[in-house]
Length: 252
Ligand code: F6R
Image 1 (cartoon, rainbow, N blue to C red):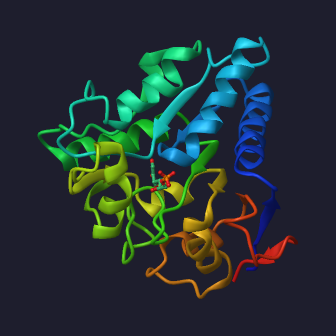
Image 2 (cartoon, rainbow, N blue to C red):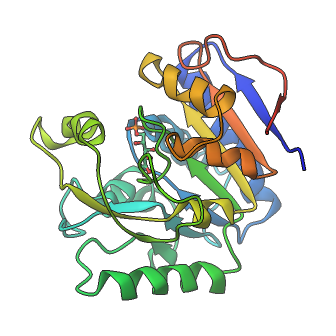
């Protein structure tokens, strides 16, 4: 079967990020009890800023939303400001009317990580599945923290992070090395979402975007797995999207 992915080009990073926020807002208005899959990282900061602004303007309410984050560092307590739980609290959850009891982030301190991971999968299922999954992309093509080589069928689990990912994310750790492991939704978990919105901005993502959209489907570039999904849109700025056709692309 041939699926198609929609490619949306924007002149600036902010325009791309705001368009993604507007897409999320549109879906939220259509389904106030939407289940969102959320991502962290520098790419998402302007998305959350815009969502907070829309909320403050009275345009959207998160009161019915349930959310599941993609990933969390192993070994970081939720209160650590560098944890993805803290990041989500400070960038979005504490600034809108979401019920924090329905915001879920993998537990980087779980004593039994495998048991926690299967509970996380069960919670997603019990919530009815993810309606819209927001994704960034790593310079090495990772989605969530599914690094090159990850099985496309994998579910939530603990993974080792690649040196390039540790280097890229050391900026969030004052230049020091981040934890070397994370708990992440698997590619199989991500592909089970009903809609996937991928935001990639900046020149550092150009090669990964080109490989994801135009290269062979291979575990060497985890984002190519998205071509096995029928409802994926890509949101690119001028730098990340250079050389990528603007029309719909054949998936496989
Ligand atoms: C974050 C995540 C990662 C990031 C990716 C890009 O929850 O799952 O896949 O989306 O590493 O990170 P930034 O946006 O910092 O370049």
